[in-house]
Length: 288
Image (cartoon, rainbow, N blue to C red; front, top):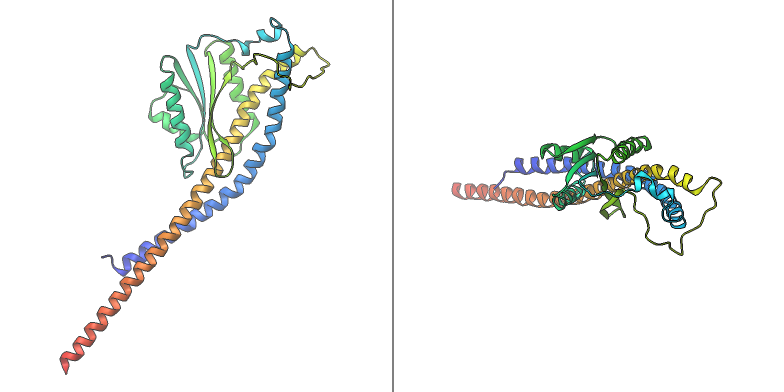
């Protein structure tokens, strides 16, 4: 049976840990509010940009110059690039584990192709360094402050490689922010940009001063850049939400452990006092 000193030391250790997890929960909650606002504010822009592109594509005739854009060209997939977004830090539950497992599944299902990894976030980078993965790009520590400039640098590099036929397709894998309690792993193709097969009756028709084909050619690189930026914002919000939830759970578990240790401590102390009383009474009786 542990001594009173051991129990007090253990309870004090758990209390110190609880203070840390509680502080981390509060910090994550504050960061989550900002990250959530940024992610939700960027969604309408991304959606409208996609709507405009679909509008142009569905109203252009097949064979138009629009459809010959290099970023729309399909090729046989011999070399594929996976853009993997993970967190820069741990202590966020299954956030990093889920997206890394999904990337392993993607690699396993495309084992007949050459898979290259563009790793955004330190945790995914550390993992695939240990696994000696085929890493073509490293972007650690970018989620402290998610910047459009970073997304632009990544998209420029990726588009150049695709146009130069160094890679035949690009996929984006990240955690999408659904709610504070829910983050969903998303995998979607970034390049070549998907072309809608048929026009939808709900597609809005826009009137442009420039030829629609020129507008489309200007929008397409911006669309790829925005897609990456939106994924980064979603991943940042999802990471803070996952960490806040994990730290809240850890704080509550610590509270339960403290209660159990306190109860155990009181029982041991009571047993010790009872034993001492019995010894005193027995000693007094022996002297009579």
